Each structure stands twice: as C-alpha cells, then as structure tokens.
Length: 114
Image (cartoon, rainbow, N blue to C red; front, side, top):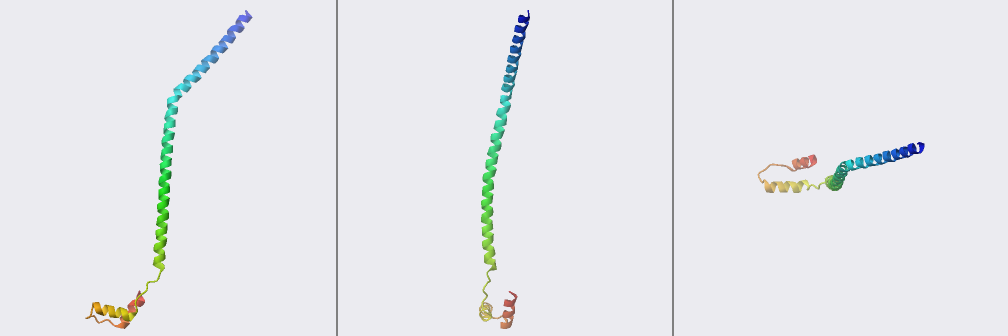
C-alpha cells in the first residue's frame, strides 16, 4: 500500500508539473498579442525618434548657416563707409538741386553727423 501511495503521489506531482507547464504556456500564448502590440509601439517610437533626429540635424544645419550669415553681415557692418569729400558732395548736391542755397560748411556739418 505504501508503494501504491508513493506511485500516486509521484503521479500527482507529475500531473501538477504538467498543469503548471500548460498554464505557463497558455499565459505566454495570451501575452503574444500584447507583445506584438508593444513591438509595434516600439517600432513606431523608433521611427519617430529617427524622424526627430533627422529634423534635428536639418535644424542644426540651418542654425549654422544662419550664424555664418549673421557673422558675415556683422563683419560688413563694422567696415567704415567711405563718404565723399565735402566739396564733391556739395557739387553733386548743386547739380541735382541747382536752386538750393546750401553752403560747404553745412555739408561738412552733415558729414560730421554721419
């Protein structure tokens, strides 16, 4: 009888192990759609990340170009503008407006203001 009990106990243990194995497989099978969904979401996030990375590269390129352009504009601004001599400017002014009564001193004062 003890041998019979032992055989039954062994069979019960094997049955319980098989039951646990089946339960774990069914849980894994039930999780497959959820895993597929998570994989799809990961793929979508990776695609968005790559897109944002490329957009970031484009924006960095535009920023570098804009900075270079700004540097060029600033370098041209610092260059002194050559103004004509007061006498030349007075002659040009009198050619365009012959009836004007502007003097050389007034032209010199205007050039000093500039």
